[in-house]
Length: 429
Image 1 (cartoon, one colour):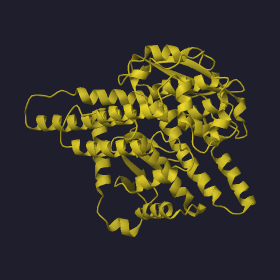
Image 2 (image 1 turned 90 degrees about the vertical axis):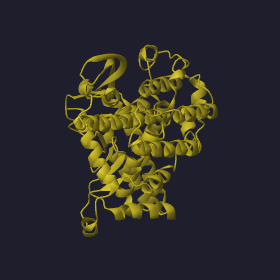
Image 3 (image 1 turned 90 degrees about the horizontal axis):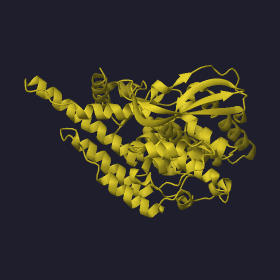
Image 4 (image 1 turned 180 degrees about the vertical axis):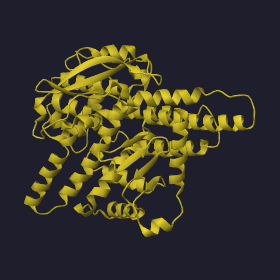
């Protein structure tokens, strides 16, 4: 599966083509979303479509404007260029070229999802189970490669239990971090809309509705991939609200997705309070960037810091990221940001061909976005900028039925999505 689908699968981010596919929306929804954020209209009237733009837009932003995302983007376009070159050479009857970059991409993609480590044991029969009823069993396992073989790379797998009944086993992966970020982006927009309600009673009712609606991410075993990080922050940082759990998860995820590999050795060693020594073991075994392991280290270190008040920290209007970095023995955010940007700029394609311009276009956009908005400490009210950014891009595909759309030609985004996903399917066969 090459796409990152939201919980209702009514919208998906396609990793291969960097396109957002909306199953039920039409082009007019994009125009409406852009008008709303430009005019500061955050009413509940169009909340369902707007939160989809926030969620899927966050995937796109994580892909092009984080260090780990850009590394994946390079792997994708090196593979696509190699695939197109490979076929042109075969069609011309020339010597069979190599496919090293195709396999490098497939290996990284496999590492991001790790479906072999996933299993649902039981369906949840009641929605009334409190998060305090959940317990975790942690296992230090190995990443599977594209051939289904174990590698030397470590991975955390989590068995979720309630009342000692196992419900699911889930790997803690890059996909987990991306989904956590995306859910918080749509939660952020929902709370902006919530604040636009003038009637106090109506606002309280809507707040309760939102809280209950998002409990499905915590209590549905088939959706734990969306909430693993938030489960950790909620349980171990003792955060009572779903909003705060996803907020802290987004903050730690942002650092994790961007931390250069050279700092893995300098991360403060944990005492093993949460993950029972797996963090230090994983960091020692890592041979390249593995953001989920960094997330584990960041969380364990702040939980173990007796002087750090997590609730007070999260309530600040602008989050002091330096506090988290300092606790974890990492450089200041400004110094780290400059190093991240330098590493981003140094990411180049291994195969230069016809699709290189598209890679360079997204890379330039991503580095600029990170330079402007990355590590700025704003974790409240940020989602409109995500929505605006993605609505101004020509990478949305609308599948909703509408007479005007029926008469229009296929968009470049649709053509790219269809073509690149065909490439992926051919690569894995």
